[in-house]
Image 1: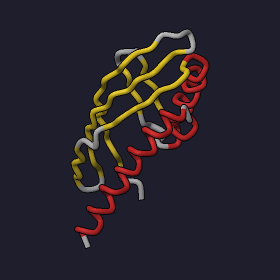
Image 2: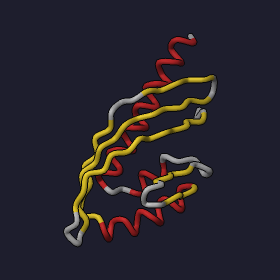
Image 3: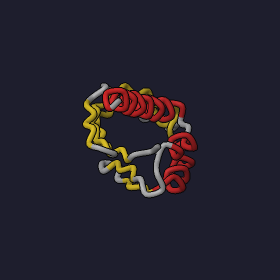
Image 4: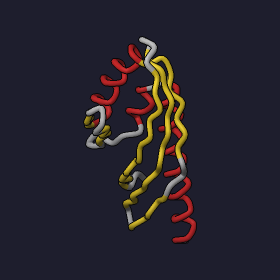
Length: 119
């Protein structure tokens, strides 16, 4: 039974990662916010932004939509490490985007994630 739970945990985490990347590209900050626990933190140190909880993420997303025309994000599957009722993960990401003022860029980042049990 533990093998089935381990497989299910990995599948659920991969689905969560896919939801996050899709929501970023669709600029759906309500959906992004729904993926975080109340004490979950979204950090983007080079912007710099640190948002805690779904409400801050949702509010910040409202500002992003006004400035970003599009984002296309590609995320490598990376790694997942399961440890009892928690897990950690790391994924490498590249992203192209264009701001509404015409600026454009290529961004590279590494996601360092912690996944609490959510059953």
